[in-house]
Length: 208
Image (cartoon, rainbow, N blue to C red; front, side, top):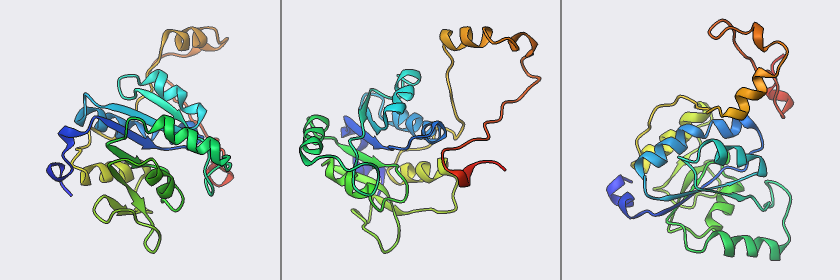
C-alpha cells in the first residue's frame, strides 16, 4: 500500500488508538504523532486513550487536537455497559474518521475495537493466526522491534515518512516553578546530572 493508494491528501480526520496507562507508553507514541502531523498538517488528529493521556494533549497541542477517553473493551480494560459503548461510538465517530491507526499492542483485542470505530481505512498490527482486518494496511506484529519503530514502520507502509525517532517532553512555566521550589534544585547544574526512572506499573518491566 502506497501513499497514493491511500490518498493521504484526502484524509481530514485521523484517530490513534493507544489506551495504555504509563507515561512511557504515551511518550513512545510521540514520534508517531510527529510523523502523522507532518504528513497531514490540516487533519484533525484524535487519540483514544486513558484519562492520563490528557498530558499529551496539554504538552503536544501541535500534534493532537482532542482526547477521546477510552470507554473500556472486553479483553483490554473494564467492560463498558452496551449503552455506554454505543454512546461513545456515536459521539466519537461523527463525522466519520478517514483513518484509524491501532497502536495498542499486538491487536488481539484492540484491532476489534479499532474496526468498530468505523473509519474509512483502518491500519495496525496483528499476530499471525489472529484477526487481521486488512492484509494491505496491517503488518505482522514486530515482536522484537523497539516500541517506537513498530509504529513508524507501520506509518511507512501507509506512505507517511518518519520525522525522526527522538522523544520530546516540552516543559512549561509550571514545571520550571515546581523544579525551582525543590530544596535540592540549587545544587543541580545543567549538563552535569542525569535522571533515571526505574519504575513501571508492570513488575516485569521494572529495573532490578
